[in-house]
Amino acid sequence: MSTTTVETKAPADATPTSAAPRRTRRRGENSLAGSLASHAILVVASLAALFPIAWLVFLSLGPDKDDYLHPGRIFGKMTFANYSHVLQETPFFDWLVSTLVVSLGTTVIGVLIAATTGYAVSRMRFPGYRKFMWVLLVTQMFPVAVLMVPMYEILSELKLVDSYLGLILVYCSTAVPYCAWLLKGYFDTIPFEIDEAGRVDGLSPFGTFARLILPLAKPGLAVAAFYSFITAFGEVAFASTFMLSDTKYTFAVGLQSFVSEHDAQRNLMAATAVLVAIPVSAFFYLVQKNLVTGLTAGGTKG
Amino acid sequence: MTVAIDRATGKRRGEPGGRPGPLSRLKQSYQRFWYAYAMIAPVVVVLGVLVLYPLARGFYLTLTNANSLNSARTIGANRIEATYEFIGLDNYADILWGPTSYDRFWSHFIWTIVWTALCVALHYVIGLGLALLLNQKLRGRTFYRLILVLPWAVPTFVTVFGWRFMLADGGVINAGLEALHLPAPLWLEDTFWQRFAAIMVNTWCGVPFMMVSLLGGLQSIDSSLYEAAEMDGASAWQRFRYVTLPGLRSVSSTVVLLGVIWTFNQFAVIFLLFGDTAPEAQILVTWAYYLGFGQQPRDFAQSAAYGILLLAILIVFTSVYRRWLNRDEQQLAI
Image (tube, rainbow over all chains, first blue to last red; front, side):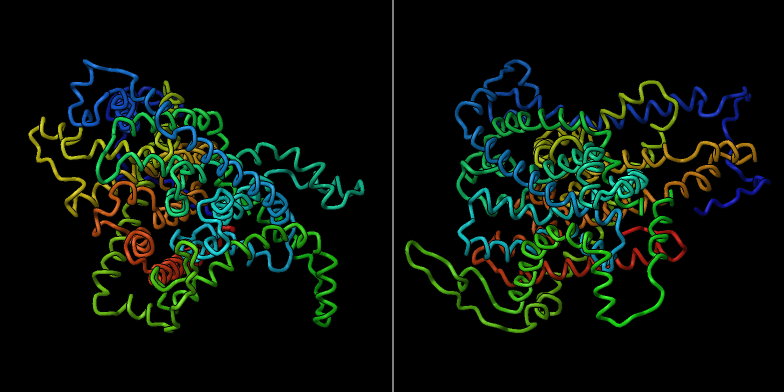
């Protein structure tokens, strides 16, 4: 770590801290003005973060499809009619099923296949290790455009266009390297001594992995699973190209189908968006603390 | 922070020094490492089948003139065989310096670079600012954090629709601007404002990830370093410059790289915000999608060629970035 030694003589033009009479503050405590400013900025930022979502929720209560242009009128006629319409008369539940099938399928395959790999690249420095890590990284930066055309060709040859399996396979091409990457980061945080102890007690590397490391890695597996679920859940490009019949749409595609050339049912769209967003966000909040460690650990630890 | 790296090199040092013949070396490494190869085998197989094979095929397609009129297809019960031909590197030549290459490729290329640079810079600066604010002892900071993470928690395809309602002509943003007697731009129609809107929405979507990652980084900086700096009379700016920023380096280098890759490939925001209506605001990824799937006849070959070019750009960028990071011992361990 390059901790540059700070020069002891502070330069003359050092930023003047608050000119107010200096009462001794403990470290990490702010002056009153400072904390007011912090609160002000955070409140503004929070409003900016909250508003588009809150607005969507608000618009979803307006019954007419042009209400988004006259939000004032919604107050007089708020109703949950959009929601009941979406739930009863649109393929909402079909979309729910296909989204879940595709996302869960991707998640299960991704995590299952990637777990041993994450372990191997975390613990063993086999020849070709660096190249392999490089390949994992490169597959994460595939633009959708690279694989889309050939995948489309291959899937149509295999008659897998418009099938769940086809979409799951497509998503696995990104989910698998992604999970391997995440899991490596997590396995790195498990002390190597545990492996050594296992080996001394006569376990093979597979045994060490299955009996000692996997149980310890449950949180990491959960993070990888959640990430691949979210990624598959929110993917737009492949889903809108490969899913043709409207009962097999995932939410990402289904939501677009409310706006066609002839008709834009924006009120229904808003209601569906809210219905989709609520459970996902709730779930997200449950696991969010683990998410970032999971993601950045892969890059910051060797 | 460098513990794991040391351990990695430690293992490497243990490799046998003498160089026996290639065959016995192969055998030896097989004996030592077959576990490792067995463990990565599933992923290697999946990558081979699901990534490399399509990639190779896609590359072959770029050397042909395939489009939806001459590819193999089934109409009713009739199967029509593919009739496209091998045309060598013509697609690349056409894209890069063909007669309308500026309008089709270079203008999108420039916009994609500007888009990536601006978005990542905004993500990073705003994210770092908010992370610094949240890292103070502050009343209600958990609450702020939960709200500020919201844009990340809601799926992009949902939030972008929310933004479309707000940006529409007559939507709440323009109503607000008019109430303030400011000009109300046509966000979804005028090229400049389309680009502006795209950057705004993407910034809104991307800041939370940066903020949370950098907050994690800030919390892992040893507080005794700050104490020492303060004892030595370092000003707030100096503490930031000489303690915080170096302490964040490893997190920063990772999130910036991820940010660049994700933004460069950001499909959902632009596609969902504009659909086909904004040819000038398309970045290369959405433009390639448009060529291959958004128009008739679908131009598979050119779309795939764009894909290969995009991948090449990213690989070059990542290599340069890695080399640049490695120039002074700092490792981005990938």
